[in-house]
Image (cartoon, rainbow, N blue to C red; front, side, top):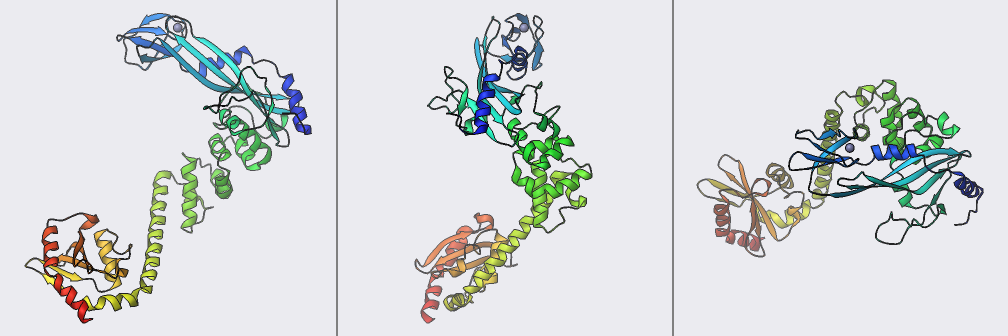
Length: 424
Ligand SMILES: [Zn+2]
């Protein structure tokens, strides 16, 4: 891609000016971003993946220090003799007033009994100008199944920015980094928050809120809000209040959810009483239950409204069956004769007879079976078309011990429904 704009021309020029990665950075990456293992066989014979040295370790610990090279190793019980691991990592550098994040692919090969072999390839560079403009210089991507596969024969040059570049650059940063004066002034110094380094840099240039958080060293908040700007817009006022009260939530995603729930409940989202709970999880769950209750009541009102629109038809079609009671010595089965009765039946039995608007079905009748004390047992649907029971269900749609008896009882009385309809 030929550099066209002034910014692209500066990037292309600076791209040539970068020097090779320092051996110290590679050393850091080998130490910190890939695993180091002790191949252990037969319970105690260990081989160090780093230096290839052999030693005995019988302990139960998950990690052990190699007596030969002194590296800390994760004990892995395996018969494998070879192991390969790759990982991305990056460095941050400032050059010609531009910020650049250089992304490297580290490839480590462990072969039992030999020192580990590492190779390190630079993949791409993300560039950020003082005005927030971005560009990428990269090796060419190869066409194929893997998105992040690069052709190592090509040069790192100006190319079209793609999602892949953003994804692979969301990785570890070598802690000895340098940034432009602007970024440094806006708070990018010391230990970085656990988020995308380039998104952070970009946000620091354009968003004073991220800058404020960086300056108060609230790294957890920065890490969350850099990738959740939508939540930042919503919760910024609450954050300011909470921060003034030195409140630091254990989990920002849960805290933002809580703020939203408070809003839904009509509570003051700037009051420390609500937004600085000691037990965040408990408060979150409490407000969530409140909102769910509100939702349920609203849905019920709507359902009832819809039901009322069907009320006239309901009485026209069903009133001829009202008053039919079928019973034996223990059980009494009666026709539900109001829409409220459907609602109550559904609520008590925890099934959908009301929600699914059975009262509006013209070719069936719903009956409630209860014992002599009035305790509900099952809800019965009798089909006028088929002249028999098509379903009968207990609490939460389960069957009860009376199931067969109820079905038989209603079916034996089927003629009463059909007669009632004829006389209507
Ligand atoms: Zn070793």
